[in-house]
Length: 139
Image 1 (cartoon, rainbow, N blue to C red):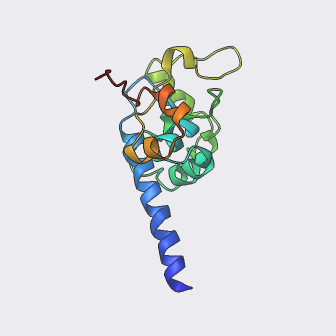
Image 2 (cartoon, rainbow, N blue to C red):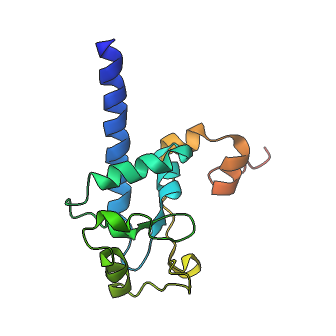
């Protein structure tokens, strides 16, 4: 039983480390979604786990303020100490918001590249959408 616990803890740490590496790459003036980060880490359904990882990294210097939900809403803003800090940081990077207070994803969305692990685990149709499937030339 202890080995299983260590294995799951190790997987969690590996996933968190991948999240941190991706978040560190989000460019100035851009945002990424929890789901896109989870997908790039290999598990699209783990968007909430991305949030948990970021909650533990708030004092790390990572640009966690650049991660929003799929609608561009600032769902993590309550973890920044001041309720307005996340929005203030994004506005200081010239990120624009719509009338509902959501980031304009049409202008500021950055999509991380899928990891090799993520590309391998996706079904064929998803691979075609990501552009990872290479077309073969007839021999």
